[in-house]
Length: 133
Image (tube, rainbow, N blue to C red; front, side, top):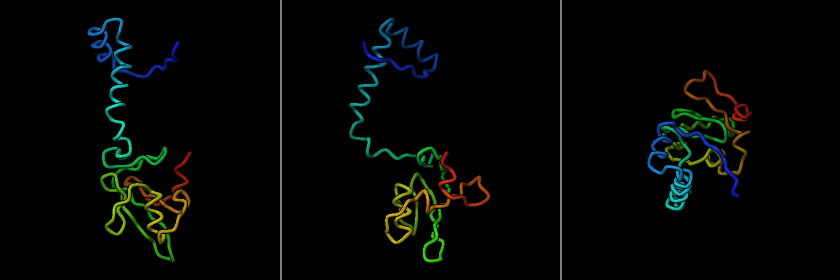
């Protein structure tokens, strides 16, 4: 017997499935999801991790307009999140890690430690690591 996990599904959608597939609706759900995963397998690397122009960094939701900064040689380097990408010196970066490295002379750094974040609703910048739970 296969393990089963229960996921939330809108009631009206479930009722439509039951009406169409009767008692076979669980199989229909499995088939649709498997078909979707097969059709989109090549898209996985192209998916941008954003919601309405923002970006979800692990468990931290960064809305569009968020500013990120780091101090490098006594100067603040500042970037802005626009359309799901971090823009620094007119160049887009896909991840905070790549952004942080670019802001710090293309050296590998820990973005959680080196970056500060100021979302549009924030008054001040905060250390990125303070957003982690």
